[in-house]
Image (tube, rainbow, N blue to C red; front, side):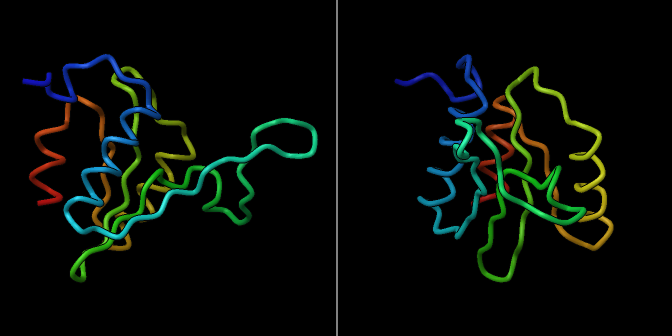
Length: 112
């Protein structure tokens, strides 16, 4: 039997891939804005506006429910902008989460 996801030492990218696969298997529509290489060979994410810096990693939607999720490796830290944006989204009445690999069972419950 495979080890539970939260027991594995995962990078944020590996964890994000696992959450995306789970969401897809449970019929959630989701979006992730990913960085790309610019002309100077530097990874950047093209965004504008005051919500751009700090925007959550995943936006998930199913059956009238909208979830914003910031994903972090187990020891990853939220930036001040991430905290600000998550607080704004939550104060607007949305479901907002900061998920880590150790939250796997809770993530499964929320998305099921």
